[in-house]
Amino acid sequence: MCKALLLRIIQAIKETKKDEESEDLTYGLMKRRDRIIQILYKVSDSQILSVLKDLNSAPIGQVLENNSINELYKNELQTIIESPDFDLAEQRVEKIKYKQKDNKYTNFFKNFKFFHTKLEELSPSEANVFSEYILDKSRLLKYEVGMLNRL
Image (cartoon, rainbow, N blue to C red; front, top):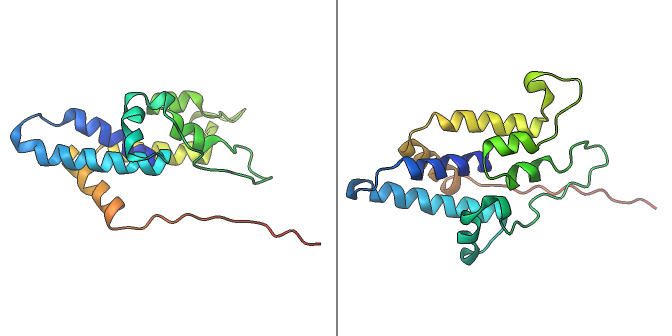
């Protein structure tokens, strides 16, 4: 969801008028955009600008390390995060052979597409309020699951 939210915020910043009345909205959107970039790409404050210049070649840290022996599409989430926009993400993700329409995509991409579609419906001010709620009033939890080796 964070990647879809980032894409919506970037678009909302472009849609927002550049006048005195919209300064607070633009500032809030930019602040939340920067926080999401730090979360997604594991970058410092000084690296945010380089990520914004080119999301396609951003200095991306490994966000997800999937060591599951059962997961067929281990790099799918990383592929979505590394894609600069929705269309490129859709082109780059795995397509499941012999499946049609949305069934040809993995659950990672189907979830990303769902949030992307829903977030596109929000106005810039609604996107700002929603991102504020997600970033400031909720907690993001990181789960790590390990397997103990038995002797």
